[in-house]
Image (cartoon, rainbow, N blue to C red):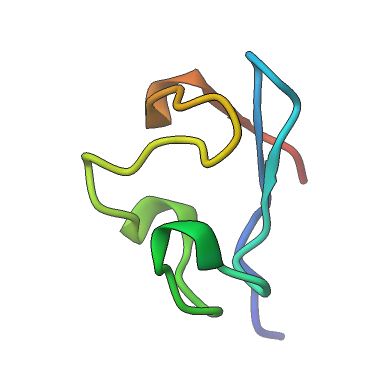
Length: 57
């Protein structure tokens, strides 16, 4: 049984990073897991850093 990558929610604004969708605003292709995002990646809605996200699933 394959694990699907988890979605993460921004605790600042509620944006949900879904690996199935990626992040077109930051040129992140679909299929990129949250853990694989670059360290400098920020929330596309409020610009919060990765450490402001919690697992949603």
